[in-house]
Length: 208
Image (cartoon, rainbow, N blue to C red; front, side, top):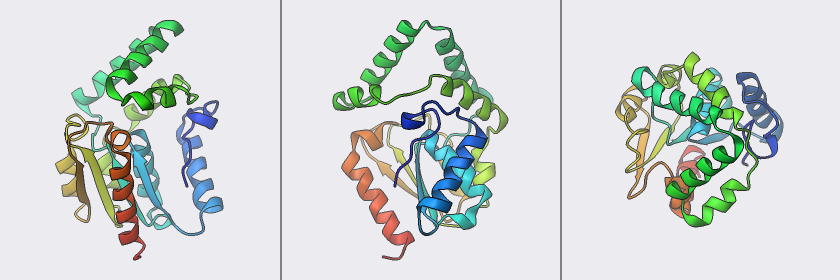
């Protein structure tokens, strides 16, 4: 199953906070799925998955982490924080134009309209920035996770690959898959390939 995060889609009206994210994942794990799941997280979803799994590893079967092997520490945090502050200052029409231009430059054409149609609370940027400020080293939280981990990155996702080796070193059971010829938007540009990667890893995790 898939679920929107707080601030996104059908949960656009729910603030993106630790409490709300934790409550959502606990609901999914306790009330929706029949057994501990393989959690697949892409970008922000990957950081959410790491935080939950590091605290309650027994309630998961494994992790697939796509586009999230970057620890926002030191200079790596400042560009994101600066971008958040800039978007907060933009009037709504300018903000919408900025987001549209960003999507048009980074996503396949067929995905731009799809993504823009999804409700999104722009406060998520500020809310996630506050969370990042509190916990900048995701690898420290997830380093003791004992279950299977697959890291999936786009070949040219240079920013989010910058700490890739550190993650692999701290998680000796983790394996790496590279989607060649793409950047951070790899799972959207290569949907069938990414889906196949998820399916293959799921079969290994569940022994099928």
